[in-house]
Image 1 (spheres, helix red, strand yellow):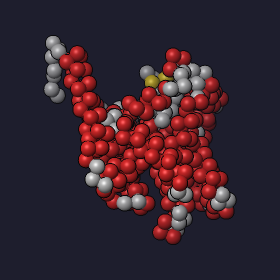
Image 2 (cartoon, one colour; image 1 turned 90 degrees about the vertical axis):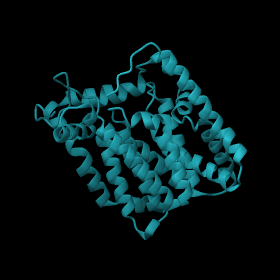
Image 3 (tube, rainbow, N blue to C red; image 1 turned 135 degrees about the vertical axis):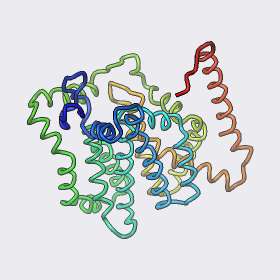
Length: 335
């Protein structure tokens, strides 16, 4: 993109590549323009967006709950295995994560009339547009599904009308659609057939990795992604389900719908990838932090050690074994 000065059509090995939309490529190419071609420049965008995701999490929680829970949530999400890993990998998922979470966070703040304004809905429209420009139609489909189900379960039908803002629709169209229109103009039905047909429809209906197409796939991914907080996260989800039955907390319902929609949608898809359910780390971190904050308030030191200290110790033991197995006898080069 930088060498050819073609900032519209992504390419791989000189051939036009229809796998993903343009936004992540723009970020990476801009980094190369500013800092030159290097591994550091290639990894800059995911690292910056990982930082932005933590800031977004902290900001959303202090808007809706307590400051101490916000700090705990940042620690939990920021040190979880998948978050650390994706903050370093040159793939779209961390950027997509931030725009997805921003869209849902802004929607919720608009729904509860935070600060007495609907500007949050406009921010949600823009965030979904950027998500669509980063990874495709799911950038609007999944947040939109969470929003719709939440309003249905709250039986607040008038909010659907309040959400439909002509200015928001215009912002979405202006941000998301010009690149798609440009690609269709340049490449015609080849773009439609490959981008929407192969990389969206076929991935959803035909498994690329049949051996991974098992019902428990994302359960295993979840346990791995939340390390070393997996055990506490499971405890928090169980407690949250109990609380959901006994109290009518809109935030609690919203967080569980967020998890259920993303988890359920991708479980139904034929093709499964490790990063598809990554956006659920945001609500899970909030629920886990709330559980941990309650345990700290109640001075349950022994319980905290069991749910956190033991898993961390086991994880460190696994790391040591893995390091011995894969690094013993090899040479380590410090760069």
